[in-house]
Image (cartoon, rainbow, N blue to C red; front, side):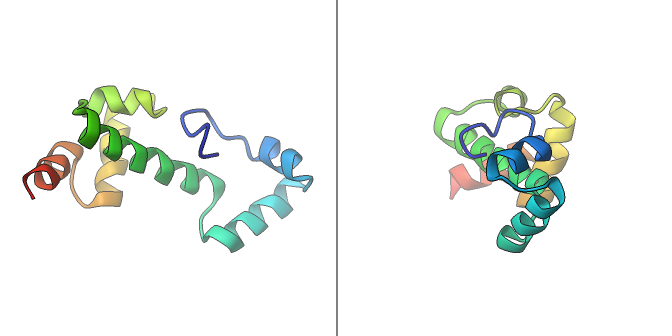
Length: 97
């Protein structure tokens, strides 16, 4: 999942790779990570987006597409939910610190 964070996750495909039923995979994944596969992927995408904005000074809109979001506004909402501030404000605060 980490290597393909920008691609759509299908639990059925992941379950098949693990040799489990989708239900068993989902249950075991959540027991190990405390997240669903989709939540895990979302967190990886958002952390990678933050890294890209800090290291490459990319805009939030560009990064949103780069990490697999189809909608920059959805990206901004989810980013703010995870990091406590919209991308521009969060990155500005981190860069000035």
